[in-house]
Image (cartoon, rainbow, N blue to C red; front, side, top):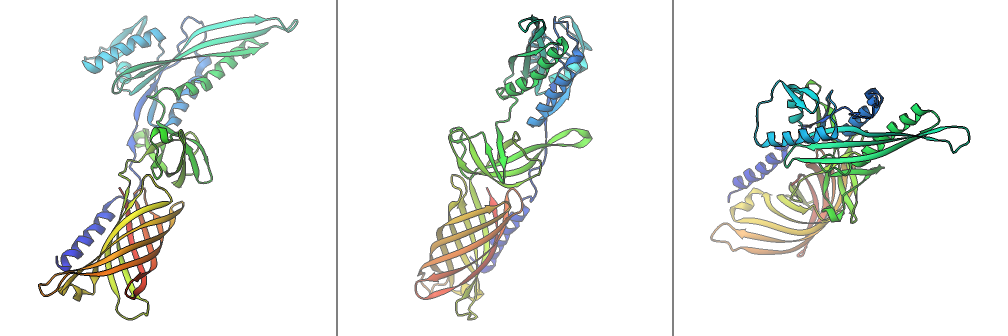
Amino acid sequence: MTYMTMMRLFSALILFAFCIPLQAEESKPLKRLTVLRFDMGKTGLASGLFAEAEAGLRLALVERGGFDVRDAALSLSPEESAFLFEKFKTAKVTPVPIPETVSIGEKTVSGEVIQSLLESAVVVVPAVVEYRTVEDKRSGATVNYKVTLESELDFMLLEGDAAFVTRRVETMGYDPDKNRALADAIKTILPMFSYELSAVQGIRPDTVILAYERGEAIIDRGGKQGALLGAEFTIRGVTPGENGKPSERDKGLLIVSETTDDVSVGTIEYADPDVAAGDAVEEVKRFGLDITPYALTVIPYDFSPDIKVYAGLRVTLAKGVYTLRPFASVEFAVYPFSTYLDWFPVRPFLGCELRFRFGRFELAALPMIGIEEWFALSPSQTSTFMGFGLRGIVQAGLLVSRDVRLFLEGGYEYWFGNRQGFLADLGISIKL
C-alpha cells in the first residue's frame, strides 16, 4: 500500500463524514386524523353546547403530535360509526368507487366527505349517549340539579390492521342552576377523554416526556420497554408546512443517562424553548457506535524537529453505556513520507472515554494503551514490534447536528523505550 493510496483512503473518510447532513432530520408529512362533531343521539341537547369540548379535543390531539388533525362537519352515533367502520374495513381490502352520496342510518353523507374519512389514518367519533338530570332537595328549600352525561369516543384506526376502539366516560355537574350544572358536566368531558387517549395505542405516542426541567427530561420508557443507557430520542413537534399543512419536526435531542424499570432520565443535548412535559419523543435508530476519523500530530517532548503525523480511526461503543464508554482505535503514520520507503507503521489502541455533556458542548478524558508494529515494505527489511505505549487525551467537542460532532484534542504519550511527546489532533465523530 503506497503513501498516496493511504492518503486517498483517509481523505475519502473525511469526505464521507462531511457529506452527512448537518441539519436535523427533515420534516415528514403527518398522518391525517379526522375529528367528527359530537353526536347528541336522543338526548335532545343542542350541539352548539359542545363546541368548546370539540375544539379542546382537536387541540389535545394536535398537541400529542404525529397527526394532521382535521375537522369534519359530520356527527355519527356509535351504531353508525361502527357500521361505517365495517364498510371502510371492506373498502381497504376491496376498493370500490364511492357514489356521490352515501346513506348511513338515517343520515345522507356526501361521497367527498366519505372519501376524506377513508383517506384518514384515524377517525375520531365523539357522541353523547345518555343525559340525566336529577333534582336534589336535601339542602333544605334550595333545589340543586345533578346532571350526568355519558359520552363515548370511538376510534376508527384505519392503517395496517384496522381496529375499532371505544372509550366511554361519565361526567357530572352539580349546581342550583340546571344550565350551569350541564355546562360543568360538559367541561369535565375533555379532561376525562384526554386521560382515555393515553390508552389508545393508535393515538398516543409510544413515548412522551413526563417531566422536563433544567436540562433533563423524564420519559415513560424504562428498561422493561427496552430503554438503554446512551439511547437517543428526538423530541417531536409540529410546524406549519406547505399550503398551511402541518408537518412533524425535531424540537430537540436527549440521551438516556439513567434507567429504571418503567421510566428513564435523559440529558438534553439541545432543545427548542417550547419543549415541555407531554411532548412526544421518538428513539433514533442506531447501531450504537461512534465512528471517528482523526488526524494526530506528535511533537517530541524535547521539541526536536522530529514531528510525526498519524491518520486514525476510532470506534466507540455508544449504547448500553453513558459516562464511561470503551473504544478501540487504529492509526498509521502519514508523515514523514520517507518512512514508507521501507515501513508501514501501525498503532492499535484500546481505552475508554470519560465523557461529560453540557448541552451541545462536551468534554472527555481518554486514557488508552497501545502497541506499535512496523510492517516491512521492502524485502531487505523485517517487520518489527516497536513496543507498548500509554496515552492520555483531553477532548473538547461540539455537537453540530444530531449525527455529527466536531472536536479538538490534546494530550501526552509515553512509549516504553523512552519515546514520548505531546499530542494535538482534530477530527469528526459520526453516530451510527
